[in-house]
Image (tube, rainbow, N blue to C red; front, side, top):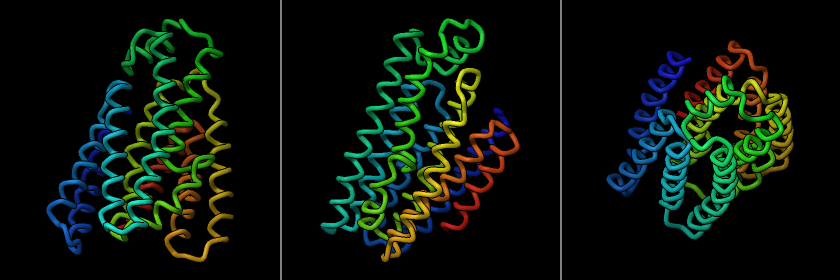
Length: 261
């Protein structure tokens, strides 16, 4: 698991750095744009390297705020409106994650990944019924951050207001570190959680994303809802609890990254 995660970090760092070079060639504010973009990449790397929930939350918020600034870089009314929408919806997701952390800390007294893993796998200090609510709140928070069902409704407006340079980064690149962090949650909570929950999220995202795509007329909105459809497929592979399917899900994710370039 650790070797695979290190490989994902290496690929993510390479692709993010390549993306930062490609995206800053045609922008008006090259220095500012490059700094903000690489700041988001820094928070992304901290996120996939985190060992506790507090670091995870701080890095997710740093990534969110960096993306909000990137969305508003075109300095149009629509771009600023999209940035504000993105911030307010992200606050909702952060609220769910904070609720989950509060419940976990009240039950365990620590927010370290290792301590939570030890408590669930070896000490058995919690019943599965007590685990369900913090896990549910955490997953709801991640669905908002990943813009999948049921929290996919805002992604089209945000993508439409973002510039072309930010569009791919927002819909594909920024979701990779969050998905890797969700894989870490899979390892921690796996003995107690029924992963059909992820299957239902994936199926709903796949169908609602496809239906919403067919109803759109603008290219930006079509691509935004298509990304919901694609992330839904990743969730379906993630729900099988098979190492092979999880690896295939990441391969599919990286193909999306290459396609976005």
